[in-house]
Each structure stands twice: as structure tokens, then as C-alpha cells.
Image (cartoon, rainbow, N blue to C red; front, side):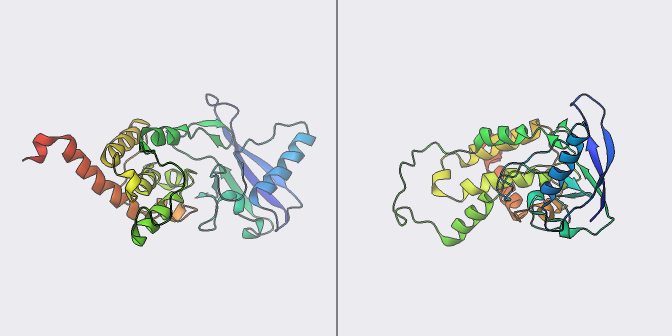
Amino acid sequence: MKLKLHIWRQSAPDVRGGFETIAADNVSAHMSFLEMLDVVNEGLIAEGKEPVAFDHDCREGICGTCGMMINGNPHGPWEGTSACQLHMRAFQDGDEIWIEPWRARAFPVLKDLVVDRSAFDRIIQAGGYVSIRTGSAPDANAVPIGKEWADEAFDAAACIGCGACVAACPNASAMLFTAAKVTQLARLPQGQPERYERVLSMVDTHDSEGFGNCTNHGACQNACPKGISVDYIAQLNRDLFKATLMDRPDEAAV
């Protein structure tokens, strides 16, 4: 295949960026999207040009670092797929592809397609932990957990923190990410001691980092490569409401 790529190039955070048009020839339909970018970079290097900077690590849809907008869609046209698992058979010979970084104030561009997602780390640091000593692995039946709650905790923990939810949301909200990290612990006995303190701290950090509010568009759920449900946002809101009342005893008594 021959493709025309329009790739966002920005040499530094404080430098104005723009799209650069690059021809990609001899692209195999069996390549992953990142492998295609590797080939493009090899060509740029051979020409003495600066390669395109993009995040990647595992290339197996696990780490969540390969976030980018592809033709206006987070991670590209396939649902439930990260950019590293997107293959070039999703495109046709002669297609034009627009590739750009996540667009959010809380995700400043560092270079080309690379953004600073350390705001997610700070949300986790604010409450994504348990203080009790879990020790070594206990017997499976030592702490009874209902299957429904165990399944919900497991599904919430599937979030890879890629940031697609933020990129898809018209408000650049990270509520789906925050809700998943809150719920994966709120549904387990080990997460109960800090349950309400956790949701207050993580939501406060979410807001202070500059993410927008959730207004129930549902775009985050559609863009998530792991299919995290917006139901977890409802769970977060319920816990946040309870935590707010507990944190303000005078109001709770009214």
C-alpha cells in the first residue's frame, strides 16, 4: 500500500507545532500501525531527517503508552483496540491518515505524538493504594468475595491508563480512568478502610490537574481499548456523595 500521512510535528512543549505530510510506500497490510511508523522513521533517518517521536513499550495492548489520535479517533478506527494492536489492513491503498497526539490541557505535548500523562500518576498516588498488610497470597477462600463484586473489581482493574477516554471526551475529563481506579479497590474488602477518603482525594486531584467534568456523553466508553464501562463513573459518584456527607457532619445531620 501507498499512504499519505499527515503527522503532527512539534519539537518541544513551548514550540508551535503543525502537520507534516509524509509519504509511506510499501506498507504491508500485515504491519501493525506502530510498525508502519517504524518504517517511516527508518526512511526519515536515511534522509537525515528527525524521526517522529511516539510513545510505545509492550506493543501488545497491555501498557497503554501508545496513545495517539488516528483520523480523529483515539487509537484508530477499530473498537477495543490500542494503536499498537491496530493493523494496516484497517486502511486502503491511497488513504490519507491524520495522526496527532492527545489533545487536553492536562496532557501537554512533549514532542510530536508524545504527551505528558504524569497527571494520571498523581491521581493514582492520591488514593490508588491500600494501607493494610496483605502479606503473601492467602488461600482462595480465606476472604469471601461475591462473584459479582469480584468481577466488577477485575473489569475495572483492566484499565491501562492510556488516556483515550480523555482524548475522546469533549470536556477532556478523566472520570472514566479515575472511576476505574476507585472501583477496583472499592469492590474489595482490602479497599474498604480508605474507601471514602480515597474517592475524595482522587477526585480532588483529578480536578486540580485540569481535567474537565463528566457530562455523560459516553464517548470515553466507546474509545476505551479495554471496554471500561461508564457504570463505574456512577459508582464513583455514589461513593463521592457519601464521602462528601461523611466529610461534612453538619450537612449530613440536616
